[in-house]
Amino acid sequence: MKSKNVIRVYYIISALFSAGMGFIMGIYSNFLRSAGLDEFWVNMVNVCFFVVITICEIPTGIFADLFGRKWSVVISCFLETISFTVYGFSKSFWGFILAETIGAVGQTFASGAFNAWLVDSLKHTGENFDLLKIFSKRSLICKVALIISAIIGGYIGDYGLNLPFFMAGVLYFVCGILAIILMKEVYFEKSKVSFTEGLIKIKDTWNKSIAFAKTDSNFRFILIIMSVQMFAMMAPNMEWQKVFSNLGFNNSWNGIIGGSISFAIIIGILLSQKIVIFGERKMMVFVQILIGACVVLTVSFANIYPVIIFFFLHEVGRGIFGPMMDSYTQKCITSSKERATLSSFGSMMGHFGGALGLLISGMVAKYAGITSAWIMSGLILIVVTLMVGRNRNNS
Image (cartoon, rainbow, N blue to C red; front, side, top):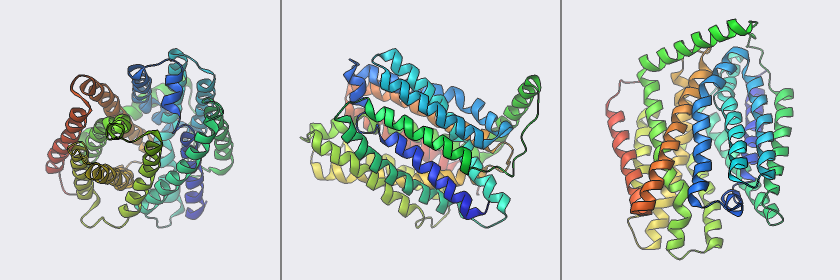
């Protein structure tokens, strides 16, 4: 495949993945509440998702490195199809946990493998490419797809809160079929091993990946900075609606704000290609500190205008940070054989941070208030980023 064809397929599959998630964006928590779950148990469903991802990231990444990134993505699509179908039929906490578990495993099959497929496929063409530009455009396409499907999902949800889940399942099934047809893996030699030999190779790949993470300071930087952001963002992700409701916003206005969040992230994505003026690593440190400061400032004012300004500035910062992190991560990984495994390792650490953030910020919000939870999260993000940013070798 030529590089432009590889990139086109990457954008198509990415857009379908985001659109599938977008269908349930506006109705997800209300669907859980409609089954009688209170706020704590709604959070626990999300904690299950993060825990399962943390456990499964490395095994599924190793599977992709040994047996093929394409088939890892295909498996992901079909597992997501099953997950959303189970969700649509579920009416209890344990049904949701089952669906969430299947979906989390499905997501881990694609998390490292898809980017690894892109990078190694592009390298195989021998043509020049700009990873930051590709990841930035991909993020933009995904956000647009998500906004469109979220609007459709919200409309469909008026006729039944479970219907958007079925729509998402159908879309992921279509995505899996397209992945089988469109994704090519000419650079990859499938491993012809017995089950026992496969286990030995998995162990060997795991050991090499861990050794790389221990010895490469740039990759450790990625692991820490990714994990701390996931930890800190759980409070804003789960509680922003309550923050604006306390300022007098009704559900309709919160819906408008929810849609505007994606536009703010799109602005950040567009800026990410233009503001790398002193290296991606330094820019990531600067942007992460900006995000933390804006989280703290959002809940430090009683007036609605600064609250809105700082809240959306933090979302713009998150839009800037994402493509930079994806690009820098892939540049740090020098071994193509372990690329998917190492990408999955980074994703695993991020989701571990997210699970921890859900639990801690939830407890702080319950016993000390939402304002305290946001301030704690923002300050932790600033302090840890400053510490990691200072302790570096030039790259």
